[in-house]
Picture (cartoon, rainbow, N blue to C red):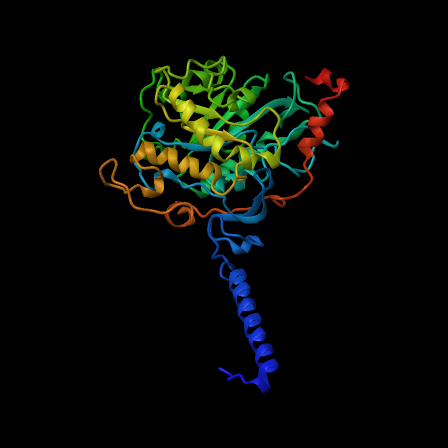
Length: 425
């Protein structure tokens, strides 16, 4: 260290300031570089996608005042990779509402699309990120069966997305490449073509994975184990909203096998979890699967991260009580990756942890250990164990930036507020 004297006081002062500057500079450099190149964990600040670790992405949540980007969960923990061999109805799975209604999806009908959007990445990417249930609206349109987000049971060219076979081929490719995974498809069914769905699924190559409706439990019994379903190659569950198609086409009538709460705004009202009118009461013991809808009537991307924070956890508790202590098997949401850090993925971990091993999260479960024997873990500072324990390698991506300002749903909500649009409702 330089020894200061009266003659060198100015030099010493300048040197001290220089040392201080270098110290502060080094500090800020260390802050900016201490967490980058894939080393950042959940809630760590980030500047680009590559800063965050496996299973994470870089995004923000302005709706909660979190404008600076940070690392968020972007993949689900596959529960069967932690605790396997249980009946299918003992697990909780992530479902995307209107899985096909994707922001920036190109229009294939020849006109500009004017409808709501519910997701931000492809169905293939949803499946790779751990989504295991797809909600698809199918219509007769243009001489084929299309996925459409429409009104009064009729598909219009400005509400159409694409022929349904395109998405079903994505599902077939995923099942083919991941032979130990099971996917559930829930169809809002407006198809009137005789045997239309049967032909559609056969042409998509999905009939070989079909779980026979004759083998589905009819009185609330347990389903076959996950392993048994995989071994039998019964890895695709399909449900329709049209009761007659169970006898006509062998497609399970949804509300014969699934309990369901009300969708839209009634399903996100705090402290309330009413059953959908088509469904039996949520506390009925005559069905062993429970679909929990959690999405507002009008989807807004910016609000999804707020919706997927504390209110979602509270609503899961409300619906759990309404169902007489039955944990939802399917959790259906919009914009599934948007959150304040952990979002739907942490809530699913909690649901599976409580039901599979009696722990607060599935990350604390130990295969073969007595129920309630939990590992000591810290949350939410570590990445999920998706790429190490799962049976597939996922990828986290948005079709575009998670913090883009332009939101087409806001425009649609505005348009639908005008009287001239009411004829569509």
